[in-house]
Amino acid sequence: MMNYKGYEAIVEFDDDAEIFHGEVINLRDVITFQGNTVAELKQAFHDSVDVYLDFCKERGEEPEKPFSGKFLVRINPSLHKQIAIKAKKEGQSLNSWIEKRLSESKN
Image (cartoon, rainbow, N blue to C red; front, side, top):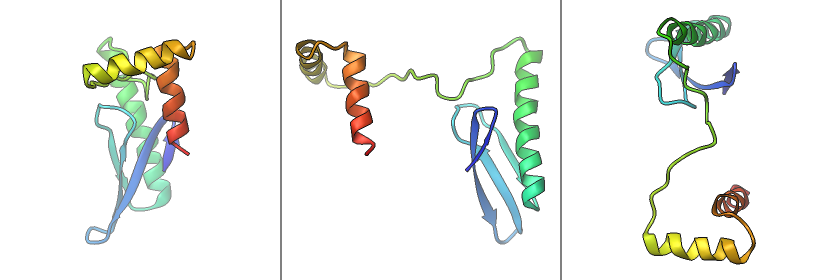
């Protein structure tokens, strides 16, 4: 795993082409890079992220931020009702209740 300016990337080695290639994984936009050595790969990653940020700036757009902390989940309405009631009974907002349960599940 590589990290630069909050953007995370995974890297694979292509044995046939004998080259490393990587992709930023924590956003919807596509950022890829490649290199023959670790040093080249690292520089290509940094350059690709910087090019992405410059491109967004030139277009007057905000670059996509890695994981804003918001995501939409569609669930069965009856389950939505059940967990909303459970959260209320426990004195929590639905968001706080769900965040707690998700945190517990990562262990």
